[in-house]
Image 1 (cartoon, rainbow, N blue to C red):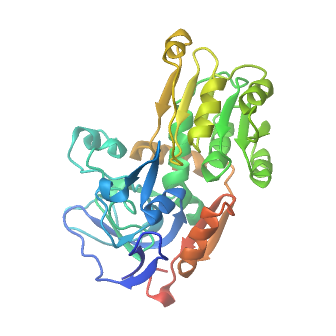
Image 2 (cartoon, rainbow, N blue to C red):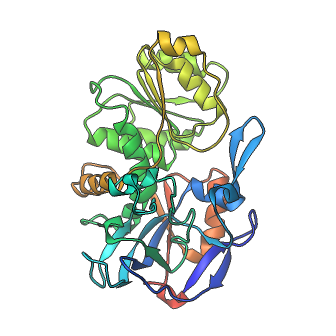
Image 3 (cartoon, helix red, strand yellow):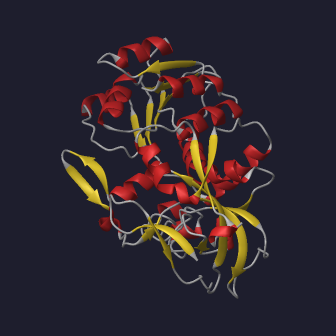
Length: 358
């Protein structure tokens, strides 16, 4: 098999050749056809997360060893499986739930794999979808596409499930109660589409990029705000006509966390999702006096991915913009994402004439 891997952090990914995987036990081997390019890939490529205050968490602290094949938004076809696997056949087309755990702890057995303390996420800890093939621990991590196009289905494995799980944490709310979404990248655009599909009507989008804000309005945002200057909190409260009760921060750096927290109304909830880095200092008396909630949200569960695919297959969720590129353009794709030149999602496609899956 062939793969595009991080061999040295910060250096261009390299094309490498390695042995075709042989499945054991319940494992299923997927020939990758489509794989999304996510901002988390940039962290893995660069080799660290910004923890604020000058602190960094190295990917080595998460148990990562190089070379590592990135890519966790995976769609492909079943090409082989172990003797204990069930529920799949050769040629089945599936979207992969990549946030796999140890498989035997209480969290994994409860289908909360993403919360496993021994997480082994594909493309994060173990090799992922920038390779021609990927090994999936169990068929329960494979979800039928249900008629969803492969390029769109790939986005559901991360930006989709992450947005879905996050917005569920601020619902239910009356349809006209403002829900604020910070960040109009792939996650933010997906969150807007999902909120609309779930019946919500007052969606305020915040970003610094005019083009992304325009796209967000096309997907159903009812109002938009450019996050420039020192008065973002005041302008956000004015735009909402009140202090909002629900804010989902898909950027989650020091600045967005601060203006989001400051805008919250009494009893409000801030759901923090993004990994852009930084820190937040909280006024502790206000946390109690205003009964505020600050909650983290990390991707989602296999159950939520199945729910999401079903919801999208029914046609009520407007798809975010996707752009297909050959896998050979992976370094250009990462550079475009790092430079803020992507609206929606870039999807890498593997080609049979390059020794990969068709």
